[in-house]
Image 1 (cartoon, rainbow, N blue to C red):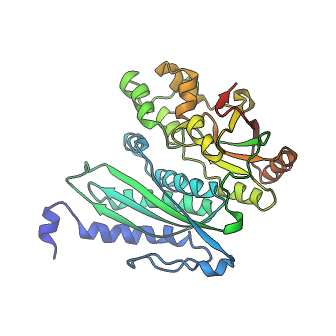
Image 2 (tube, one colour; image 1 turned 90 degrees about the horizontal axis):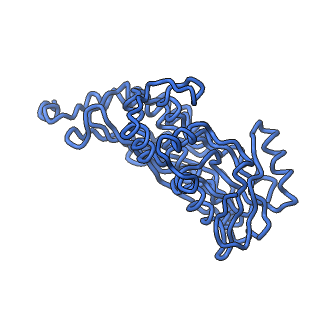
Image 3 (cartoon, rainbow, N blue to C red; image 1 turned 90 degrees about the vertical axis):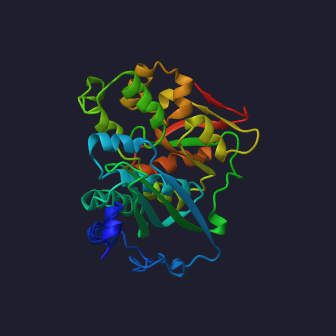
Length: 342
């Protein structure tokens, strides 16, 4: 029925097969409020069941960036969707909002249903971890835009919080303690630099096993999914008056931490207060990158930061420990007006 469309490089049948394959993954992300809207023109979500007096919607959107090129090189596609979800839900979480639903957008050069299923499996895994529903999405086959084995993944998340619970950073005070939650590695930022340093300049093979990485393949380590911080942070918010939060993404410490501060405030970070994943030492070594630039690009081992009153620091860490979460006191808010790494 669509012979000319097939000749143009777009397979409707492959699209239908992709939808059939992903249905089970979508179903396992169902949460309270999510409506069965897969296949409809819009995704539906009933916010009224959360009983918020003054609900405020908080949204975030992002992609995975050139980390995708590592996935292509490794022919591994089942975790990249976790990154897409993580980059969005962690941003929404910073404002104190509970992520509610996610929609993805996958653009491909050629629709390979088995690859689409792997990507969406990752998206669903991320949504389950973030306790939000995958309520819709779009797959676009664009044969003249992408190579037949390449694709792009992006998405957006919508969360909600009562107006009184929104975190704006207005209560952050000098002397507040910074509680850091560890990252799983590079996450999904700085991969243009990573690829230049490790693959273009140093000519390393993503499949090679490296002693510096405990014998693991370089590409495997780089593909470690971005950590999702929703469960532990929401648990802390139930009990602790967290003054401000920061998701350490592109721009590292120097760009992201000031986003939660008031004018004139700064932070002092003790770099030896938390472990640094070995992959950052590998990047710095092969790229001859100085420490300041590393902290200006990467998360360096801390993916999420909460600012709390000094008297709340111990209780915050106990709440996290009770959930099996590791945390570190990494510094404090100051009057310096800048980020100081000591």
